[in-house]
Length: 211
Image (cartoon, rainbow, N blue to C red; front, side):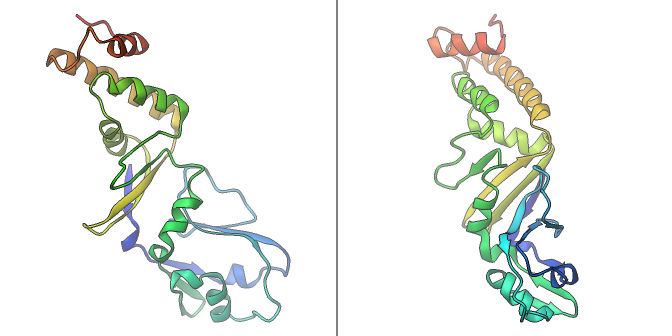
């Protein structure tokens, strides 16, 4: 999984396509790579850094500087020629909200990872806890071995971020295999209470035979 620290990101946006927009309602979305989606859907595996759902170009906005200031006020826009440089960090809290629908989980410094937004992975995580496998163990595995993006803010004092995966079906298979292998290791190390009801249920759920 590709990890991106948003504090290090500056994007150069070509403003010509935006300047040429008609004076009608336009939906403008920009992803973390600087790709623009004008009245188009964004792939679900893309992290979004800018959305304007209902942009109507002011008829008096006919130069790049005024357009950049109008659209990207919260991103500290700097115009050079036909390009506008923006800093997504300045709108980080709103960016988290923009990606709620597609993120697999949110990692918060105080709460950690509370839930997987995918119901199947959440069920995996819920059962895995009884086998001495924490949500953190699963998220670390996902970030290390699964395809996708982990977008975060990390300044060594504060940290939070979220994960978006490329293929949820593939991730489900990978995570289940990880949990099964980790459980067998935990059993071997006598870390699982095999007489505990939740552990028995979890072993049955994952199809693991305790020997």
